[in-house]
Length: 328
Image (spheres, rainbow, N blue to C red):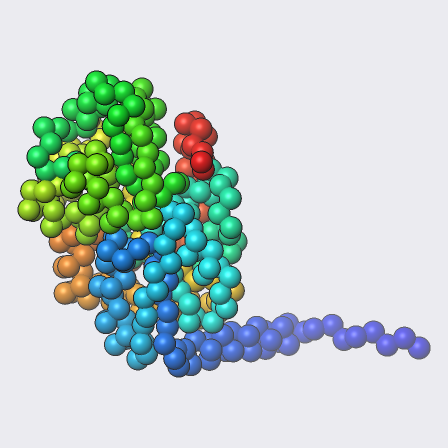
């Protein structure tokens, strides 16, 4: 006689579910028991690196373990991201990055070496930064209309530095090329910080800079913001118009910074890290510091951040196709 296995009862299924949840919670509660590495996907001195180092000490105090910053720059941040995607999903290798390059690359069908949705876990959005079209401080260019006129008067001679192919600055440049009918020469760097000395020396005509990267230069007068590449003006520089309101409504890009981990992280651990990050960035002193640098902190849950990444990829897809945005 054949014996059929007993069907799982609802009570048994519920018990199994609670067992799995408890195991995940126990793993999160025991984390971390050793140093945590945060991979920053751009070189030292850039916006994401500055944010990571702002947060290191308070995160260490919150977690009770050392937090190490490991810069893995290159290819618009995708080299470091690919390394994190391959890391063990145990919470000891996380990533802090400008997520826009991954979003744009995915939307454009670039070969990234990983999938930002399938291979990474979105954990916490730290914030969305202002970002300014920037020229040398003594330049006669005052606004984006002046810059476009300068490019038209000097075809093939005006250069623009970005933090990599497929990055937000690169896309903003190509959008302006398309909207204004001009041809700015793109010069990719490993990070935005590496483009700053080139503009200061006059070897590069422009770049896009966050306040974290450019504010000290703006205050010193060595660099000059001429347009905000966003949807609305910033209280930091209320007299600086957006590119969108200056006659180019399609040229609007955000620069989001967030924390990610490999796919497969226990959900309880993801929620714990999300709460730790939000606690740190919303502490009064830290929040004031971020706001003062044009980078108000975010309060998204992990699920909300993941949804926003998927939504942004969908929003970008027709945009990059319309301008035939290419990897190389």
